[in-house]
Amino acid sequence: MAEDWQQGGFGIYIHWPFCEAKCPYCDFNSHVSRSIDQAAWKAAYLSELKRYAIETSGRTVTSVFFGGGTPSLMDPETVADVIAEIKRLWPTANDLEITLEANPGSVEAGRFVAYRDGGVSRISMGIQALNDTDLKRLGRIHTVSEALAAFDIARNTFERVSFDLMYARQNQTLRDWEAELKQALTLSIDHLSLYQLTIEDGTAFGDRYALGKLKGLPDEDLGADMFDLTQDICGSAGMPAYEVSNHASDSAQSRHNLIYWRYGDYLGIGPGAHGRLTINGSRHATICYSNPKRWLDAVAKEQPEQSRETLLKSDEATEFLLMGMRLRDGIDLNRYENLSGKPVNAQTITHLEKIGMVHASKDRLIVSDQGFKVLNSVISEVLNG
Image 1 (cartoon, helix red, strand yellow):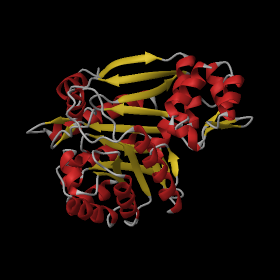
Image 2 (image 1 turned 45 degrees about the vertical axis):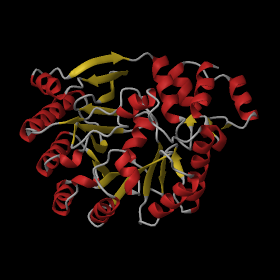
Image 3 (image 1 turned 90 degrees about the vertical axis):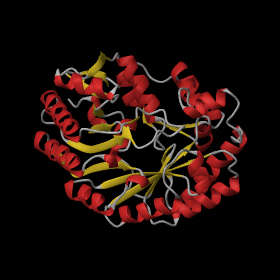
Image 4 (image 1 turned 90 degrees about the horizontal axis):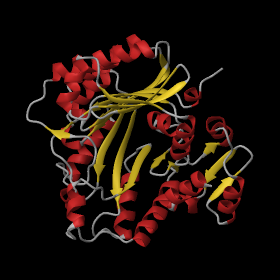
């Protein structure tokens, strides 16, 4: 009998924790360091792959994702050796997707060719804005011209290229966002990640906001209008949303992120990396030590996980719903019931259907266009129904 995780697939996430500079909006586990011992990091990643391979022997890897931080600061040899070790330790899918995140400021043509030759098939580029004023305000170290030049290198080197943009930025108007999004769509891409700027506690922006010093942020109505405009423009361009913030042409969805959203299993390797791992029928949530030095030291002792928690079936059901309802094709209600031991509350679904928040059939629950605008509230209603 197939285990639940197999409906989502199996991937490997490699976290590179270093950046050239810390962006003021970023709450990821990223660090600025003057010197990085690339050999030590490569050895640690290879060691962790071997350790996890013992627990997951025979699984087919469908995707590998180098995230960060800024993985385009990794030596290409390190990336190539990690990929080679993954292929040695596990069977891999014929259409294996290997993504590496890159910032335009760290892009060089020769480096990108080396990543491609080492096995990387997809680049995800953090451009974030297409005007220099906003790039500077966001703490980015590249200009628009540098970003476009880097994108051009990537597009001519890799099979698939995606990039990120933020909207609802300071002093941004609806017309500004429309022009910027249309410009992005002229760049011959097949995937865009479009995120509304959120102010997170513990970031420089969060501190400024708390002091009343982060001016010009749009109100909720303008943010909602920008979301609607994004759906209309991307849909008309043949890149509809397949997830709340991600748009792609046919067959260009991020396979790695779909593992998360479809609630598959994935190894989280590197400082602060999270994983989900099913062993002997039980799914475990793993979290690695977040401090880079502590993680390296812990790898040497073969104990890099800060915690490994066995999830209750009710926890799995909740996570499946939280992740799956972000997708445009929604969740399989039978799968939810198998995990939860009980169906979604019928009265809650009927109510949400009546007010236009969801579409439901015998075996699927799909959030509507209106529901996506208040997705957290819709999910809360379903969970608490």
